[in-house]
Image (cartoon, rainbow, N blue to C red; front, side, top):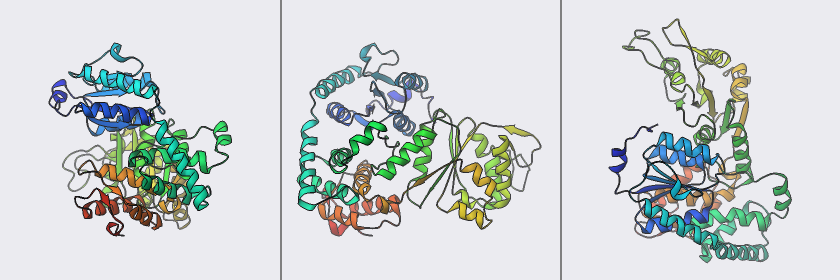
Amino acid sequence: MGYGLGRASVESKAAVRTVVLASADTHFRRVLRRELTAMRWHVREACGGAEAMEQLEAETAEAMVLDSVLPDLEVGEFAMQMRSQYPVMDLLRVDAGAEEAGARSPRRNELLHALRQAQLDASGGGAGECESSMVDVAKQVRTRRGVSAGKSGAAELTVVVRETGLCGAEETAAKVPAVQASIFDEDWGDRRTTRARPLPLPNMVGESPAMLELARLVRLVAPRSTSVLIEGETGTGKELVAKAVHLLSARASKPYVVLNCAAIPETLLEAELFGHTRGAFTGAVQSRTGRIEAANGGTLFLDEIGEMPLALQAKMLRFLESGELQRVGDNETVRVDVRIVSATHQHLRQLTADRTFRLDLYHRLAVFPVFIPPVRERVEDVLPLATHLLGKLGEEMPVKRLSAGAARKLLEHDWPGNVRELAHVLERGTILAEDRQEIACDEIWF
């Protein structure tokens, strides 16, 4: 990760004026973004500390505004880590303001002014009007269409809210789950008193019960070093869940290394994993560190673990049992501290019955198994996912919105390719819409 950037590197991007807003408060972020955008700042938002770290890993920023409470990390420790890793980034904490020590942005006064305006606006409760209107619409939906608590209710609510124009696409995606809970789920209040509602995972969109349960499980296991096995169909976002496990752990500042076991020839996979010495095999002109060793202190994500050859599975099992590896062509062993997160779209337990995957290795990898439900089983997440994906497409072209007909067409599809298929359909629709702001029904192709 590119943490060692000098002041000159940041100042060379001064014209961009990038700031990261880290807060779980959607309304606060929206107001602060509006203020800063008017001052020609490029604003990137994060709903928690882990997502903010990923934003900075992807692209450095001149400044960060950090809320007084984060849903996933302790604010004080997170701020210290950010100052250590990004010493030239101006970090403003909402609860500290101008007294915050560290680097100073040349435009710090603009940030402080925008922060004061956002705090004044937030204290005035500007978000209530939109949400109360949405509650009214939800009641109308329930009365007029007889919607019950379930998948179709949340999805239909999203369409109706979008048709009425009560809020923009982003606000719709943020508010629908809260309305669904309060209007469609009659005993939500009782469950909320016994268990806190799980927060979504970084960069994962979905407020369905299955996705909230996934988020709860990931947040439970992430702080530990337990091996995690992620199962789910192709295109459901297994790599995003693996990255969330890493970001929400104490290893977040350490390496995150990815290896797709299906993408590397069997003859090279062992050397890729464990490394090799010079002359270990034909073509090994110099020694090379393997992926496991490169992930020392951090996390190794093994995608498509079911494709690992049986001969290599035995060596992988020995590493998991001892924490030691042996490079190809070397007699010495190296001890490393690596957390293993693996993923597969196959039924790994069935592969053990077919004797194509070792049962003892399966038990080592699946200490904590999690399952990502396919999109067809969480229809209520389709439109929030579409909103999120259209927003990402808007980074390269004007943001499009869905017509009511296009939204219904998305809801009626089975999505065999899951989120990846949805992303491709929306990208195609965005292109077909040309200069128009709205994607029509006939521009949704499957």
